[in-house]
Length: 292
Image 1 (cartoon, one colour):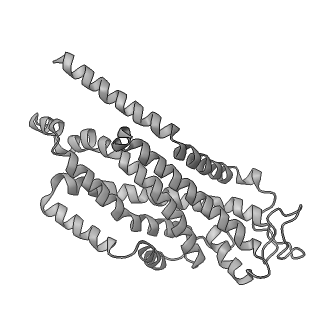
Image 2 (image 1 turned 135 degrees about the vertical axis):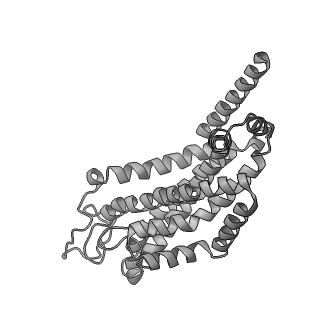
């Protein structure tokens, strides 16, 4: 028996290492990872990288174009745009990471329960998920943020709850395809409790698609946070946020276009980074990729 199980375990371990190796060195993963890491470092070291206080006004430098003194120019209150873009990375990254963490923390357990037990439990959770998915993601996030009140914390909760159905459906589908595998049936026949089967044998095998989906959803969460801030439902002024910066900049697009250019480019760059990272992980971890 040991002569047959050891090579099988070794093969599985080798496959996992091979998938991890492909994920780490996939071109899209590298490019996306570098972009995301850049913004993470900018957010973490913002106090050292920022040339000015992001909330300090200079009434003699209102709406000044980019110059040697203010590389990205100044806004309508004379605040340095580069400083506000640097500090704004904190709000966007927090929204992306924390909102997705909320979605995973709520959605994955519900998906595991629905997919494993089925029956009435599955029906109730599935109908609840369908009801949430019937409402467009951004519309649901706006409604929840408006109900909870304007703040970055409430925006993250609203985005996380709005993204939750995606992870419920994904996890449920993965569990339903795994729970009838021979190794799960064998463990169940040995009398192992359902909780142990779910946590020890099913959950580890559904983590890869959850990680991929979570990375891609971070890009959506960043866009959603910018949209909520643009509508006045996210980060509250004077705290810097890329979305609120765009909201202010739209009033001065003709006189001071640089006020909109830099936060807009920052949003595009971080969303591109998360999407490339997610696509790279998906291509590397997708078993069908081995046939290419």
